[in-house]
Image 1: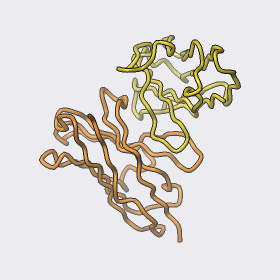
Image 2: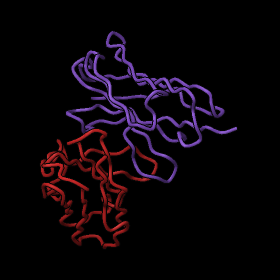
Image 3: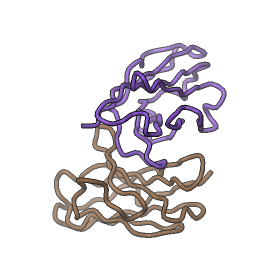
Image 4: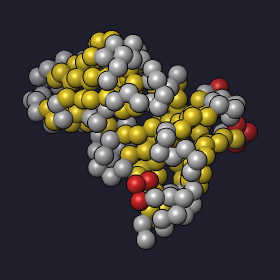
Length: 117
Length: 105
């Protein structure tokens, strides 16, 4: 059974940093692209970033490029999102998702990031 | 950026009725269109890819159609567990973008 479990969310002040993690199991992690997708409170879904199987390819939505960094550790079956210079508009539930040719067939339950003073 | 527009924002239907949801792309996405279902407080669930191909385990009452800029998700006979928000997503161009969602109530 495919499982994705996010962690690392919490309350952070504007301008601060946070690192999200996603632990994957139930599939061969190194064979798949992975993505982060976020959802602001009461709003729709927004793709944030994705990363190729070996970590050499990475793509970002414009609003986070230069502030967020996606990475992975295939030995640990883990996906990460380093978020710097956080803004109020980054407040959202962040989902880790398995990325199969740029659509998302499995999702974690999400971790809430709140940016507020 | 390709803008995805879903209509209606809210669809009121009764159990057993047919529900038809629309998704329009601001430019052609070919058949690179996926649909997701999200229930309150839960993660999205993958339903359809390639505009019309059901994901594993998705009931046959869910069907997708369309190509280019116009797409439809049809639920042939609504069950109680189908009341949720539905999102379309294009994966033809970067950045990957979602529609704003249709709430089926």
